[in-house]
Length: 225
Image 1 (cartoon, rainbow, N blue to C red):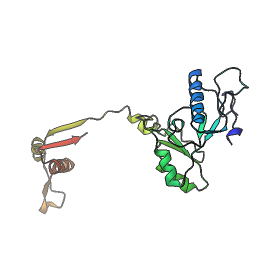
Image 2: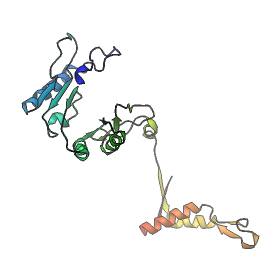
Image 3: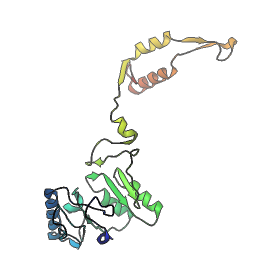
Image 4: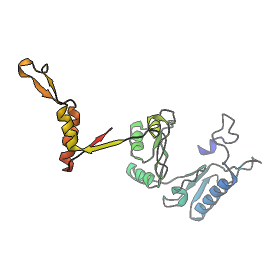
């Protein structure tokens, strides 16, 4: 399948992959693939600079096998057209391998059983997950990473919330209780004129204060605005 993927001019709509961003990055990829082979990895596909391009920083689509998840090329974010095939014994083992990483930007799951694939995608620690080729990118979908792949979000409601600020207020509980007591009002219409009673103007505030005093044992109420 990888051998059939077209790569070349990124302006061509039929192309799936273009060149590497610069010579330094291409050289880094090349060195990592060479090191993986020296460590016992097997080149199944690629591993060279394609001869058909005279300009640009190109590297063939590459597939490596006979490696484990301890190898650098399997663990690091190399930003490369390189895949490492690692065998697994079960779904649980595959989840363990996938989550044994410092990074968690994006992942992909492919499987004939849609429910099984979705359940697997829920368990991997990546911020986004493609299931059977689904495209997660969209202006309404928050984008970002887990772990060392980044903090914060772009796009979606979570992206807007990055620009908002919160504020917390705190007052001595006794002063709040005094103000609440003074603001009690008569409500004779609640249960009829014969059984009129007083209700606090802000019962939710009293509940918040009682809860704060109960939890902390201190005369301080914390009101979040």
